[in-house]
Amino acid sequence: MQAARRWVPGACVWCGDDDSVETYRNEPRCGTCRTNEEIIEGARRFLGMYGLRPLGGTLQSDDEEEREWRVTARDARAALNGTRLQNPPDPALVRKALRPRAAAVVAETAAPARRAAAPRSTAAGASASTSGATKTPAASATTTVDLATLEARVTGLLDQLSSVDEQITVAETGQGLAARARLADLGNQKTSILRMLAALEKTRRGLSN
Image (cartoon, rainbow, N blue to C red):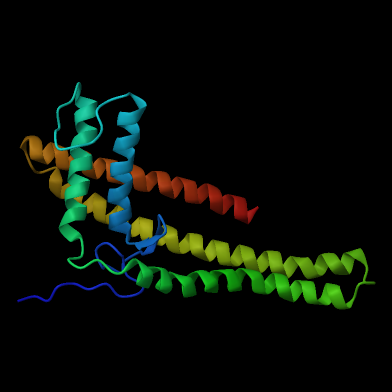
């Protein structure tokens, strides 16, 4: 009998996976769970925008587009429910595990600023050009940290995109409503990933300038 999965610090708080884990709604969540959550949230926004019935047990819809949103949200919810840990972790333990990571990020970002501030406080009479030179390393170090974080995020999204493309290839061979619903779900996942990649690219360009 296979042992029940257990949460460990650094893993997804929902399913226990440790792939592409990032903070999502103040919790560590893996890439797959985040994508499914975004699909459900997208469906909620769509239904709310047009004053339609909230998500629920029924797929009854006024048109095909509404039904597609409901089906993909249902499938995403089913995927989340199917991977949820049998024994969710204590929220206090999760918060405790997140604190060192947050502290490390703050320290990593603040350290260059402290190093740059020290020479300025001990050499108040230095020229403006010298003062400007001490600021540059701090800005450069912070930008390096941000770029490294972005690159890691992009790598994770590209891995997800490759996985979704492979699933789409398989799903395209199927027939019937279930196959079409699966394709629609995968298509929405791909669109969501591409949007996130586009947003990250804009951020990267801003940091590079």
